[in-house]
Length: 325
Image 1 (cartoon, rainbow, N blue to C red):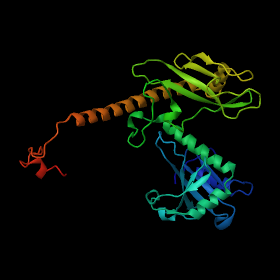
Image 2: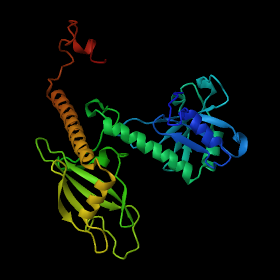
Image 3: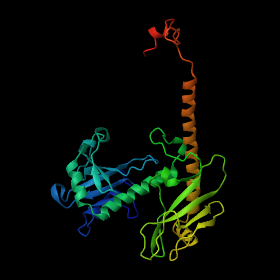
Image 4: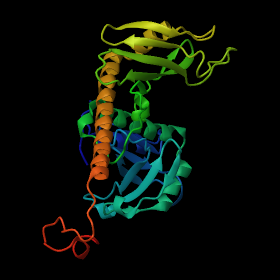
């Protein structure tokens, strides 16, 4: 396990162990986002008060919306553990459930359904929140630094509209950040749409501000009619209001100012997402055109008669050579 250090001079592992094993602590699980591991210490049942060092694994495909996290749990009292010492469980922190692991995902470890059941039973909102936060932090780090040209489209093919118009960044990258923030006591998130039309040189994104938890102030925001929306020019850091919300809600300008206050690099983030989405759309378009060209070549290829010479060059008739291969 990597011995990352923190300000106190202790390793991250030792710091997490001290927190979880402290009599004042009531958390049964804690993790370090950057190191990719945590510490588990259940309080009840077969594994009560037994400490595990936990290696965390998740799907690194930026196009995939999978929220499963695999926990490789190694007893902390084993000095030089091997994969066979680890107990593996798979959790979905959003659904707050456990699922089975296929044999090929075990990587020499042992799947332990009883441990998975015990974890789900003992985890509270706090522990599930720790895992959820880890998932989003790590997934967004991948999305932020990804090279779109190297994404395997054969594994996951994003769905785009055929007109090459406005596309949602989160539709292509489901676990990308929605920039959650609070404004005037209301919790919001941002949906950013970008023009992916080939050849277009626009520097704008359509930002729609969505209410996470509707407040009790009378009028409600309708999905189509009155969501606060504006066009944000990330190059000039300017905007043009497209749609105002009902009375009692913050204006789109107030919301934009607040999200920029909470996320100082917001304009740069939107710019990067704009270029990433356009690059992905270009790749998908190229992929589809390549498939179509292949179909056209196949459809236009001359048919070979059964009594014609085999095109493989064997000198035999096609029916006695490659026809049945």
